Amino acid sequence: MRLFLLVHAYLLLLTVTLRLRFLSVQPVFGDILSPESRLDGTSPANAMETIESAQRSLHLAESLFPFRIRCLERSVVLSRLLRRQRIPTKLQIGVKKSGQRLEAHAWVEYQGRTLSSSAAQCSEYQPLQATRKPDYSR
Image (spheres, rainbow, N blue to C red):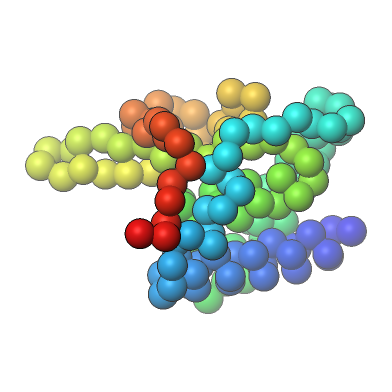
């Protein structure tokens, strides 16, 4: 199971990274921008074990990856890994002003808990609020 999760994390990381850097954003975000879904029978204790396992697998996959991974890529992959395990996650994208620059950061939340970054780091950013699912067909 652990090897499968590692391979899955690595392949998702490869797919998401290539799509974000060279193709369209639409297939990357698909279902992860939708509201959180129900756990469908996964208990909170079991969910935390699954989350920790996915985080370890993603961290190992990143260490083997030939490119530097950005927070958005990491967050999209973690969200997809967990949603496939029926764990509802929320992808957050936040912004902050730093001098004359606008900086952005992405992270994943589960039941209000920050998963893919430190809570202190994320608190520096103002989360963007989606008003509806984006239409990428234009």
